[in-house]
Image (cartoon, rainbow, N blue to C red; front, side, top):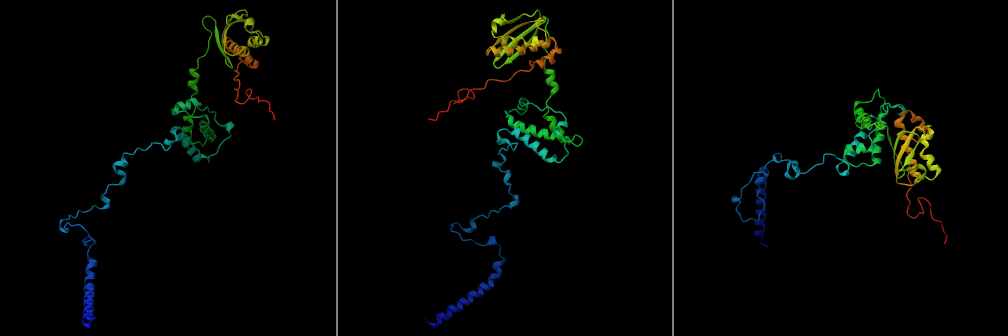
Length: 310
């Protein structure tokens, strides 16, 4: 390579370096928006309109967009549980117990007597079917809140307790007291297993008619006849009243025991003072026992077939 060309290139590089050094301060002062980016567009730069952008503060917030504003939000956090009202009540009572669990308490026997709403009444209050096990959770918390010392019990707890109290006055007022009608008849209804006995008792000389027949022709067993007339025998009123009854369903023993309860209830309408004597005789309370159902794989309700080794 000739020497003249080499020296010319060195001098050109030196001149270029000096130009860059002189232009560097000016390049630093230029704003970024004035820098010309590399582009492949065929449109002249003078024809491109520079649209000013708004600052970030001028943009509407994301939550005010149309898509976000139309989103439906459930009122309760328990909406997706399937029973929001129950879980809201349960969680509210739990928060209340957690808030006042350090307050002094009294024994449960000394706590104020409170009758809570029945399961049917609570179902009517929430408008949904609630299982008994779930409602028991609410009752357990209410029993614990009711044990707080009445001298320091907060008003918030009192309001929660009153919301679940049973309205005993209305229940008593709705119950109609039975009376002897203008013909001197007292009515009684008795049930035992699947048997139902509708009884009419009026003053007389001891006649007993069942389904339009004498007692002995309906109940052949002496034990069934004695069981049916036991309320009159126990109170020594056998010769003072006549009994007309209509029994249906079940077997003979079930019908006789249903007749026992029906006569006892009708007798208490005539003479309410006989209730203690009838209670001692065991004929005031209904026997709610039912026949246990047969299970698959068993001979009866609980009897298993004989085990055979081979």
